[in-house]
Length: 263
Image (tube, rainbow, N blue to C red; front, side, top):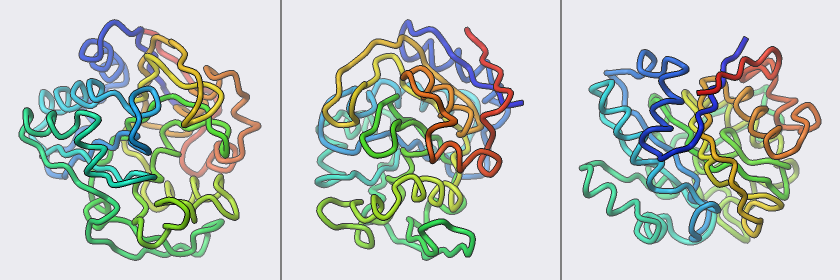
């Protein structure tokens, strides 16, 4: 059985902490590995298209309160330059205040990985810094025009090294022939170690041009399949009908017998 916490939203500091405490996250954080917080900064637009910087600050504070590892923020945006998004969306200021590094996954030194069992990506190029890191997926809860929903697993498209997947936009080649397959493949190469979903205000209808909707919760879990299943239901979808969740079930986690803890 997988556990997903659903904390009522009051403010990011309180609700993120409550959600993470409910799943015992403090005991999972390593002291001897780099911890990367991976927000969703796909395009240079304000929340809820992108992850609210206050959510990232709350995760930083929680991590630092419970372990001695170095914590950084990493992202590789889908359109434009990641550095511009870091600056315009408040992450550069946050990094300066907290004394942390920002890593641009689109330009960072990369490694080539291979998997014979991949559906689409038999080889995958991602930042070398990600290989041994503990990565916290910090997406916004959103509908998606290609994968039905975008939650913790779809957020890992940002790990793709842009020079290898750039077409019409930075990661466009990951959307053919199967966006769903690429979601599963990328997470098989690097599975989220911890998921925190900003569902205070989500985006419905589409991932870039949708309508904001107040869900009023923060989700947290260590099983990305369970987290994405719970989030997808909140958006009004049946997770068993969503290809990437169905394909990931039993491989990256489970959407069966999910215990939702409301705090």
